[in-house]
Length: 314
Image (cartoon, rainbow, N blue to C red; front, side, top):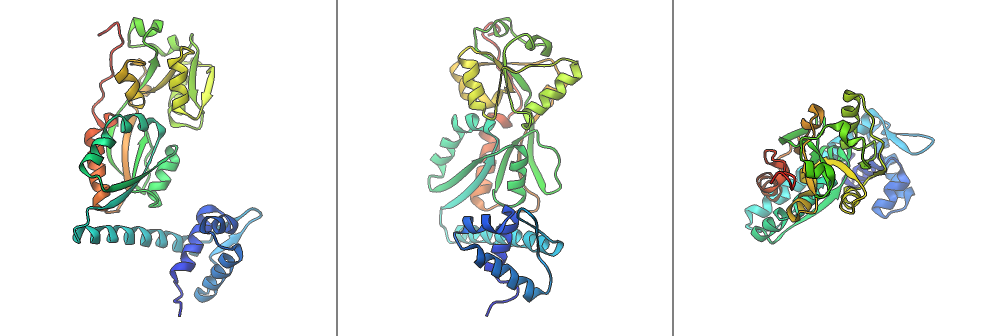
């Protein structure tokens, strides 16, 4: 006999609220939408309270529904972490870690730290989701991921910042570009005279650049806008223009000399941070804790800033 807080019904409610519609939840769970509707209705009947409101497009949780959604999220995370700890007690050298990160961390992570970690812990598995700043925070706060790597995130009451290291936004150029040959620091108004590629306005790095433009009363007119750091890297490498990014986001390019990072003389661009975040109050499973400590120790993004010199400064 089902209890009022039946786990399957709570999961249906959770997914419907998280995805914003019964149909989307049904597709994600591979069940008929009518099954989810009936189970949520039965949960409402058992508890004697409305849990969702039906809108013209989708649904949203009532106050009672949101309470159950938050509790289910907490229960799921606690259960997952407990199972992981039991495996450790049993001596199983296995585990899985879910990481969500901004694309800017990929070059740094894949340039050596991840391989070194797996050499030490070959039986651990991981998943990496790429996301913007707000979605990284949301995924960690909702316990969909154990660890978040995020750039210049604002404060959030749900989040614990494990480490925050100043990582300025730099001018990224090909080594033979005139500004690279001259060396830094560069004035932002100098950049305005060159072709430049930038992230879309919804991205954190672009928003910081926009504030820096306003502070100096200048306007950059990007030749290219994109959602991809990889696109910007190739834009610069092929000599089409410049871009503005933190140096750690082009770690592999700095190592092989195909790009250089030059400091920009602007306090807003100089004050940005790379951060490692977890959900406040969550005790990470052993595997996730091991990975977190290793990334902080090994990734360039979480070391004190040292911007590489241009070719003419070496």
